[in-house]
Length: 448
Image (cartoon, rainbow, N blue to C red; front, top):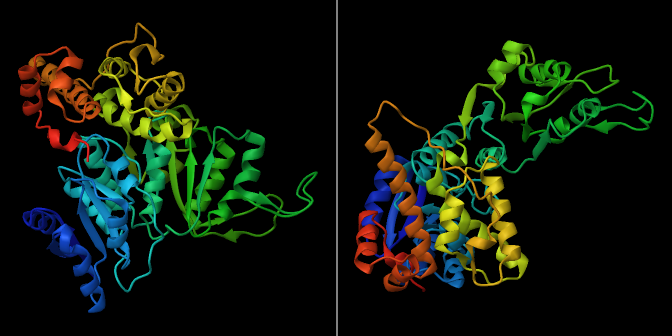
């Protein structure tokens, strides 16, 4: 059954672009903001309600207006550009957000999560905060969209702090199991002698102090998703038991004399090279093949420095209310310093640094002196493609930094080019030329 989508935008041509991307997946219509609520009401009364409203984010819509669009049960997805589209969506109460310019795979992924009229309604969810730009995030959305609707086992590879659990949650929330439990097991955090009991449970009398039956986390994840974080730390004896679960959907509690069946999807994650572990005998080869059916690889933050400005703004929005401080962002000098650091702890480390700086900060902007980073921090390590000319690779790195710097600068000064130029110590004409070259729209940064 096709999803019914109402595009609410100044330009009717936006409807054509959305319809071309969604194809046969959706029936797409258009309305201006002024008549959208009435059009939704008419469609609902006629028995053909809209499932999704794609709402333009400029100017930022008021929360009551967004609520009126959602009254009939439609899922409101904001179409927003700028440096913090997720923050804007949360502020106005939209259920989800698609960045502008629109990435086809992201639009398909977000719209596909909406319930179709007459089908079971999914519970409301906030946006999955997968923040990034460029090809890596597009490819990630593409692969999540491919695998989410299936029960295929997923293996997520990436350094610590790159967001592996967030990706696993996104897969679960986008799957038919979304209303069932999502159970997390950190294989590295539980002592080896307790891990088997945590996973599989036990029966009364199985060992000293086993005074009653105990369900393990595997049983707790029944009908849902079991996320095994740091799977490379799983002891070999438990690897054999996990392999049996994957092969037959059966397991046995400690001390039990019969098997139990379980309906569960397994998603794993690791920051280790499992192929090397297999070669050294630390990981079963047959289990490796079983969990590596659909691999996802997350890049470290040092390979995507262009995302730092977006992440910084997101974390400022996240923590300022919790800290009870009126902090609008960071100064250009602070952003430059944050962008020059390598982040061995990846996004998690950046979040901690922003949180720490906001605790110290006294003004409306976090100053460079309030950012606690090693003074001799190395330059970002990019993925170097030596098959390409040196000049091209160098220019790509410069462009990524310039775009991030300009985005944060314009946001801090609400699109006021004169103020931004003074803060950056640049000639206004030179700054304008850079803004034009990177295709940034100053209107996106102006106060509503």
